[in-house]
Every structure is written in structure tokens, then in C-alpha cells.
Length: 267
Image (cartoon, rainbow, N blue to C red; front, side, top):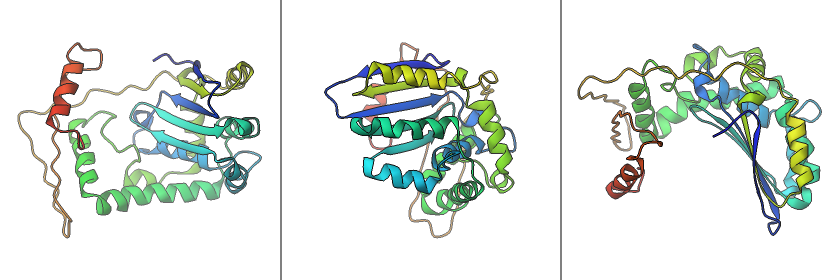
């Protein structure tokens, strides 16, 4: 996909709502060493930490009657912000959307709340509440060891314990930049609205080059890892097979068919 503030439009004047996505090409591979989870925390704080003029509570009160849906999602190489709003409320909601992404408040109380939630997920939820997820995450660590894919997008226990708010501010300036952004708009909106988004987000600064993934250490022969846990509700088995195949390969579609044949559930 193209980046550097490209806009993809899918206008549908018969719809009653507008869906907007902002995709930044950064993701957890941009977490500095020793600060794993910083990209995810920055994204959460941008969306749930209020703006320079409105607190997170005030935004919730304003947007609740408009049936607005907002989310952020951090993956290995991208971070996505999603917004959905009824067309009749678009003009009222857009200034809030714009300020969340361009003028985030980064309040201390919101930071502490979201950091605590993220640390609880890493320390407790993933370890205690989901044996299947824990096995899959450990498989990622083993498959991608020695490269920036390995760690949880949510971070590590040690990194989150020493994460200051200033790190979030600096990471926002460094990695959430115009040259890393792709915008998608769909639904019932005007051409003038698309032009306004293009103009407003042109004010974003440019930043560093795209983050490097690095090279994973390939396994030698067949390897096993067993995670033993007292009181586990069940046993999960996850398998990984490193290969050179990508979506650009001619064999990719055939492999997807074979994968489906083996079983859709949790494939």
C-alpha cells in the first residue's frame, strides 16, 4: 500500500454513516529496545487520553448520543485508528477526531490508567486467563527471536514498569508522522469533507525512515517448547513453519486453500 498521507475513498451517498481509518506504518517493530509496548501505549493514549481542550470523560459524554465507535489497534508493522459516525453528526464529531490525532492531551491520569491496563494484560490476562493465547504468543517469541517481531505488541513486564509519560510524547513525535500515514474514508460524506481531512492532516510533521524488522533466527531442526502451568484449564498446541512465502508469491493462494482444508477454526 502507498503511504505518505495517501487517501483512499469509497463514497456511498446511500449510506447513513461515515467510516474513517488512519493507518500508520510503524507498529511494535518501532518500539525502542527496552521500551517494548511503547507504540501500543502511545496509540491508546492518543485515542483515550483526551485532547488539549477536552478530557476523555468530556469526549465520552459528547459522543455517546451520536453512537460513535472509535478504536485503536497496534500490530507488528502498523497502527490503526478507526472511527464510525452517523453522517448527520459528522460535522460535530470531526473536530474531536482531528484533535485526538493531531492535538492529543497526553494527560498524566489517563496515562497511568492506560499503562496500568496494559501492564495488567501482559502480567495477568495473557498469563493467567488464556492458555491458548499464551501458547501462541510464546510461539511468536520463538519463531521471531532476535528480530522486532518477537515481543508482544502490548510489551513486556520489565519495559512497562519503567515507562514514563515523556517516552510517549517523544514516540508520538517520532513515529506518528505524515510520511507514515494512509487514510481511508467510506460512506456518505462530501468532497469538501475529504478535502478538509487532507488539508488538516497535511500539518503533521514528517519523521524518521520506516523501522527495520531485522532478521529472525531460523530454527535448526525440530524444536519444542513446553509451558507448564498449575491449574491450567486445558492444553494448547501451536505449531509454526518458517518459510520464504509472502502474499506476492504465486503459491500464496494455493497455500490459503490448503490451510482452509486443514480446518477453518483458529487457523
